[in-house]
Length: 193
Image (cartoon, rainbow, N blue to C red; front, side, top):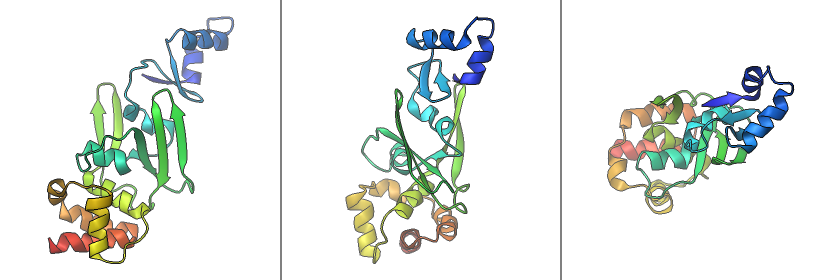
């Protein structure tokens, strides 16, 4: 369970020095520090369950979501998330893993994201279509469909069978929100398929 420093100190207010007690509890493994001001009670908690609490608003996307949805064969060891209006990339190296955050357009941010409940945790994650658009938004513009196909299937190693299962309507809706050449070319590629 995620707890803030103030929540824990409130629980420990009966001690002469709640801050010292918290330090001892961290040393004893009762709490694991995530980032400044944030702790987890279970050190075995998977990092993706914590990503939205570390920096936000954010949702899991990019390579992590592509892997999660089976679009790329590689396992991804960083928890990659999308934000908006932050103006710079953020990276946190924690006991739970590496967490990275980068902007997508504010207009595109709320679309194609779902809330997943897992035990006592919940997290936001991009749909396969949204994760692909987020990644393409961050890439240098490609010149034509041939280059896009090479980027998708050679460089990014998108599974072609999984690619065929993407929902065209979602890509068409997202295309309008990004203002990205690559996302527009993806939309054209889907229209032809």
